[in-house]
Amino acid sequence: MADAIIQTHDLSKSYGPDRGIMNVSLAVNEAEIFGFLGPNGAGKTTAIRVLLDLIRPTSGHAEVFGLETRKHSVEIRQRTGYLPGEMSLYENMTGLELLQYFASLRPLVDWDLVDQMATRLNCDLSRRIGALSQGNKRKVGLIQAFMHRPELLILDEPTAGLDPLIQHEFLGLISEASQHGQTIFLSSHNLPEVERICHRVGMIRGGRLIAVEEIDDLRQHAVRKLEIRFAEPVPVEAFQDLPGVHDITIDGAVLR
Image (cartoon, rainbow, N blue to C red; front, side):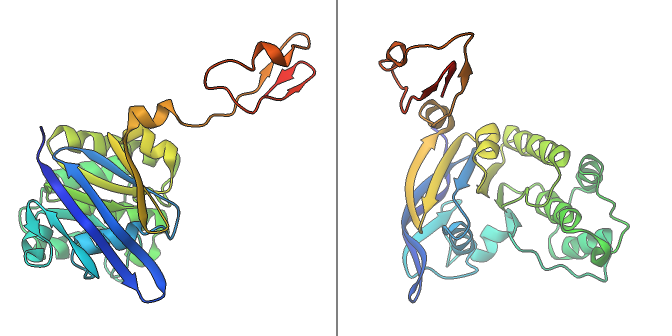
């Protein structure tokens, strides 16, 4: 069985009267692509910030690489690549200058990987950050998260602002990282995106983890709406007893 890279135990963060996360317990295995799925405001970013010790939990605790996040936050961050949901970059720098600055703080950057990612993501690193669109700033953020080939990637809504072709290329990068043994913890509010790339998904709503499921299991009981058009009207009785079929309506020759 794969080793758990991330483990949380009844992890809670309260913001006074405002809801954060409550009693979140989960485990993410080595080389797994784990999707953290929920609507905006569900608690995804709060959980990520607690894992990185950017904020402290109200109760419970978390471990990353088997290390307690509060006591060993520096070592955990050295071994982790992080893309925040909201980025604040030095806008007077070019993309390359920004990556060089990060490289001075974090050794062992793979510059060949930087060049490959810039090409695959269609990211012009010679342009000044302040002149970039939000989507292109996101690309620079993705490169800085990957560029030292970290053991763990924590990516908060990584495809926000990316066009569909670049999203597809990014999902390929994620799959390759997993094949090379890296672990990916990916937050999203987009179920089709999570279904395409993740091995398992944890669903969070209102600060509470409501389910953790294998993607194949999630697909099996996902609700789908179908519309079938026949050549002539059909009787509703022919479809009422089909397993897994509910809420049938018929309008002439159209069954929904």
